[in-house]
Image 1 (cartoon, rainbow, N blue to C red):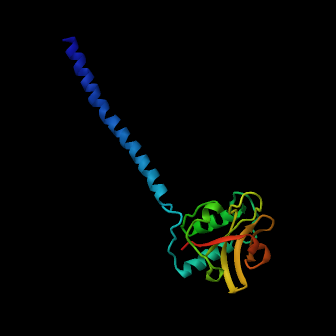
Image 2 (image 1 turned 135 degrees about the horizontal axis):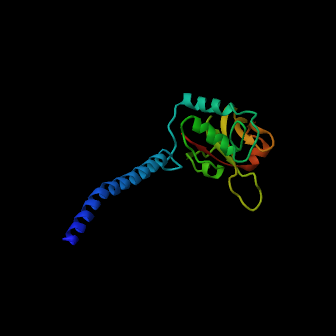
Image 3 (image 1 turned 135 degrees about the vertical axis):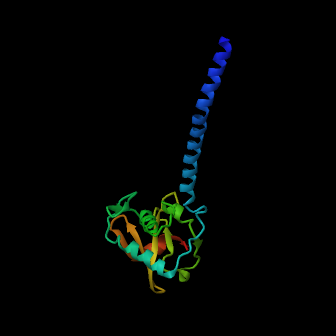
Length: 184
């Protein structure tokens, strides 16, 4: 009789605990689903351009120009200080678009623009300014204005002068120009 009573109590205890165990499994699944949802908001392919209108391109450029004069700060992404890729990252984020954080990763985002005469406002430009052993993209900017074939302006964060606009068609910038990408 004692074995039967113990067996009944064990079964009742199992029945009482089973819903808690099953519910805790569901809680873990919900957390994983939330993580998946968060990561799927980012582009699935860093090379897939985002579709935006010319009016939105103008807003993107205006958003980037709000940072003019902000000092250079490695790893920075706000008005206290920012680096070149942080400028692009923060500007695109304001538009609700997630792009990679580092210049070398950004240089693979969007569609390649092969010729300088095909550049348009909003295109991203990339440079290799470290002429040492590593020939890797390490600087980025965004085309803001095209006044003519010899006047293509881009915004970027200079290590010595902070966020500013410069003419791409200059001896220095053309000497380290690597590629351009159209993110939309």
